[in-house]
Image (cartoon, rainbow, N blue to C red; front, side, top):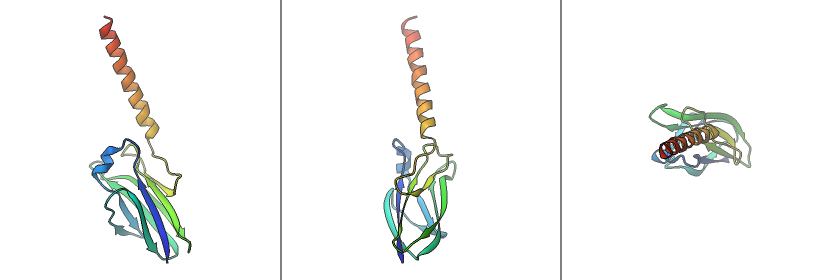
Amino acid sequence: MAVLSITMRRPAGGFIYDLTQPKLFIDGIDHQLPSWGQYAFEVPTGPHKVEVYVPYVFPRKAGKAAVEVVIPEQGVAMEYMAPSITFAKGSLGPAGQQKSAGFRAIWAVNAVVIAFVVIVLAVRLFS
């Protein structure tokens, strides 16, 4: 047996994810997770399929990610990062290397909205 350590993360500002918890499947078996955070599972050494998603309204399975991993005797540390946009894929792989898909797009939209509000306020103020 070996240990599969997996950290479940959500993007900064992704407070909506606090309303639900990620779903983790190892070789098709559902492992109930109470919340986001770090978990460890004893698994046999060898190949395994790890799948994660976040239950959501639409899409039903937000941030789906899956990976085939070979677990050696010393174990493996993995990380799941939920996407910033629910329609994007989640990121699942080596710990410390996962980034949130759609993060830059969200910030770009926020910047455009803020700029628009500033322009509208300036026009009204100086008209």
